[in-house]
Length: 143
Image 1 (cartoon, rainbow, N blue to C red):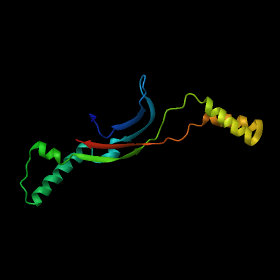
Image 2 (image 1 turned 90 degrees about the vertical axis):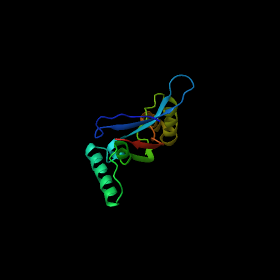
Image 3 (image 1 turned 135 degrees about the vertical axis):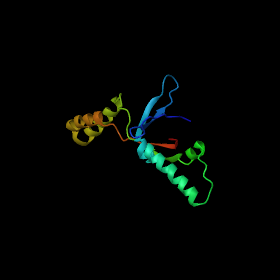
Image 4 (image 1 turned 180 degrees about the horizontal axis):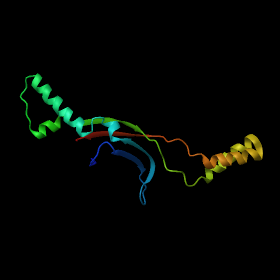
């Protein structure tokens, strides 16, 4: 498990980075995504917390249950959980594009001769490809 301590949930942002585990040295980033904590847990502000505790106590009273104002019991009622997939939205730039440029130039030359080769090589240099993948996460928010 990982823990994130946040002072102001309104501005907090979760960032997930997927890494390729290299045998030698540090891992290489494959892609990343980020979400505001408020997007995942809409009731993350202090006002929302107080309202949620108040609603829980009122529900217990309405059901005729004994109300325990023990702080630990009240906090259990405001724990929020989220589970889902987050699509990767960014990836690092490709540093070595020699093979990519060569393939694009060859394809361009096959279609339109020398001018096609030049355009294909230029396109191959700028093309970064799609960001693919997702992060599956299960999060628990304890205000």
